[in-house]
Length: 139
Image 1 (cartoon, rainbow, N blue to C red):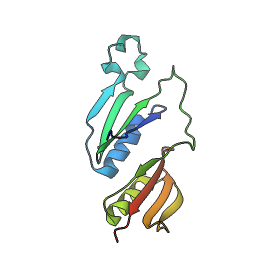
Image 2: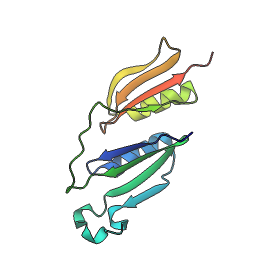
Image 3: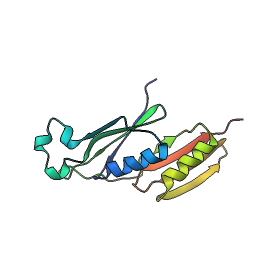
Image 4: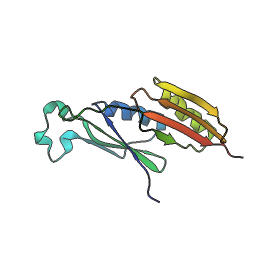
């Protein structure tokens, strides 16, 4: 089966957001490409050259990817139409990820045991990205 990866767009703070995610997941980037590293770099304003063209952070079998919207592009508006759902391998990992990623954000539902047999919670992180953590409790 093909992997499902999530791609996030930010208004110039992709690097800050991804360094935060890296600190929570404890993984290393598999790709960081700046606008200045592209074949069209000579056409990009100097103020945008250090912005992120593409960044990739492995999380389990998937990859979280992102980019900066340049000032010359339409700016990103974060809404309520998407979430990233994490399915951790243990209750401890669920708590660690929930607590780490929600730091400085807005918790919509605390991490709690749910009627469907999972430890579940959701929040919007400090960068406006919505997350769900769903750990299926082993019986």
